Image 1 (cartoon, rainbow, N blue to C red):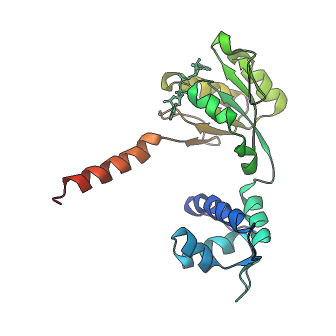
Image 2 (cartoon, rainbow, N blue to C red):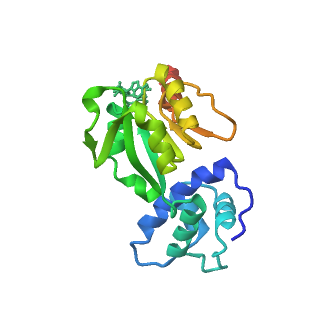
Image 3 (cartoon, rainbow, N blue to C red):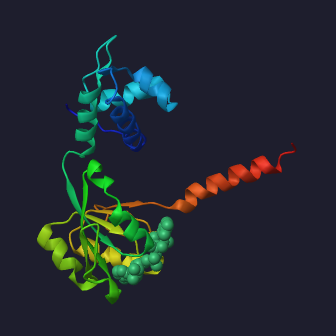
Length: 213
Ligand code: NAD
């Protein structure tokens, strides 16, 4: 399929479709319509139809999509069928949790090694992934042509780690430290900031609780 340029919003909805489709693929029906997906996920069906038409040409009038084919099309579009090796830097509470999660392979992400400055962690294995000293990061990334780096160090260390990753040839960074990172424009920084989601929850609650009952 010849992909047209797809918006960030559409890309962020695709994993939701995928999760739902995978659950449905275990059921009796082989087909699904955009309307059914929209209803199940509380989305607008015109939007869902448009999103799916951008990544799959398998939709048929009155029949919908073959579920397994649509799963393959979405996975292919997102690059999940092409595994990318990643390294993780910072083996603390969050780093260990990410290393211990075995579900990333479904998203084409394989964390092959971890790095830390804490000597007591060096040589440990977490979920089969070895922890190396930080001074080995650049060499391993270059040797294994690693393109994804995951940052789970304290905020004040994050820019330094980001710089090392960039110099090591990493092209995409998944950053969990709540700090803005500077990198060349061809390096994608995807930051996860829980404070943003929590701010929405907190604001919603304070508005509800301040209203007279
Ligand atoms: P942590 O203190 O438990 O772990 C940090 C780890 O990074 C330690 O093992 C430390 O030795 C290592 N480290 C420090 N400087 C380093 C460097 N320059 N190079 C390599 N390793 C280095 O912290 P945490 O709770 O895992 O949080 C890590 C980051 O993720 C923080 O920025 C935090 O704000 C963010 N975060 C954490 C959570 C959470 O649930 N724990 C949630 C959201 C965001």
